[in-house]
Image: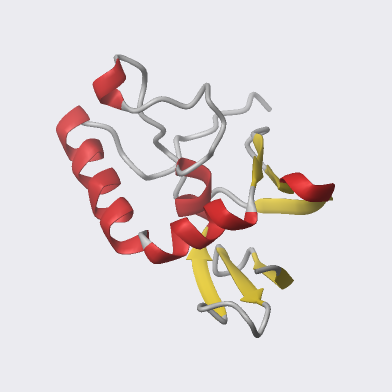
Length: 124
């Protein structure tokens, strides 16, 4: 299985993934927020491990995607975060999108955090 093309739509905050014809998934659309909160980086921990929950990512944008040879693709977000997503992990995110998203929403509610972007105050 391989990925033929990515289509980033930062106006809608989505990423469309076009998988090869031999894959059991052909096209999938994921929110950039979902991709960001589902980062495979090991430093991103869930609340049950005693670490912080990722929040305030509703308006995060995906700046670019870089091919990282056999390892997958590096996603670079506008909040300074980047991570390498393997093709298999992206497939898992597509298949488990509904349950993972609901779990995230439940964790946010339990922790009292929000999806909304924090206010960025700048001195004029």
